[in-house]
Image 1 (tube, rainbow, N blue to C red):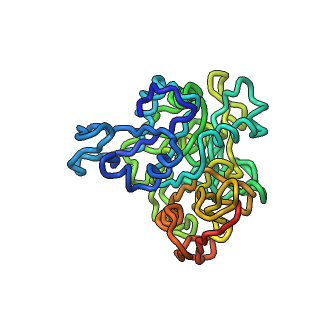
Image 2 (image 1 turned 90 degrees about the vertical axis):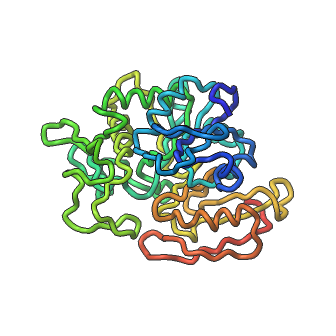
Image 3 (image 1 turned 120 degrees about the vertical axis):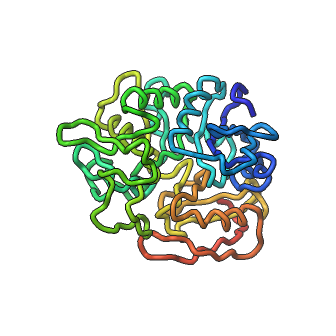
Length: 358
């Protein structure tokens, strides 16, 4: 797929490990997108020479040297050339479940979207946990504060915090959001704000220490993230830019040139599975018209009542991607795997095929 194809929806990935010849027929995200005839484009790795078919990663995997800024730089280059009506930025540890028409319909029907002028809004997708764990906003430590900083979670909208792995919007609006970050945050995309200092100035994660905790991030004790112990790693610090942008939007601190953002807190389009109890996800393969077995795989998130189009196996839920892919592929019977639950240790996830409509 080329960036200048006029299509309703184009999915954009940046994956320096991607090899089309090897991965397109095997990786769940590419197979599930192909089944729904949704075009996608994969960014080429920086500083390497691709070989083989377009999109193929380098033959020598030692040449790969991914850093968080690589993805954003590629997006800044490719988005001006995209002619699709909408773009969806995704990570690759995803299973896709719906049509492009459903994605567009959900966007049109989203209540908050109708209130925004000229449909400029970029939709971001919430997750239950806060990452990086020591992110601040004007002196408020976001992860441990249930009322300040981010709007409080509710029973039907439990996905409170921005995850930078996905975004949905018109190409020019997603580009404008990234360009606004570039103008506001020094060193972007190789550095992102970690919070505000006592003088109100932004403090940053160090651009050259993306896998070593800078002073702001060094914890005084071991902490946990969705039940997993942290030892001071600041992996994924680029998400700090998205936290800062969203909260500046909430507090009306952005300029008019910066597009507004809407945070999907109910997992209408995509659910980030980290922190989601496996028992709250009902999976089925029902025929859309007749309710028979063998139809399109769909998921119902019981706690919000939504049927997301994508399941993102992020963080500690990554091990769930394989059994989910087996279910999607039509494996019979019950597939039992361990799924990290929200604070109670592992729970047994049963993926059963059901002959009912989702």
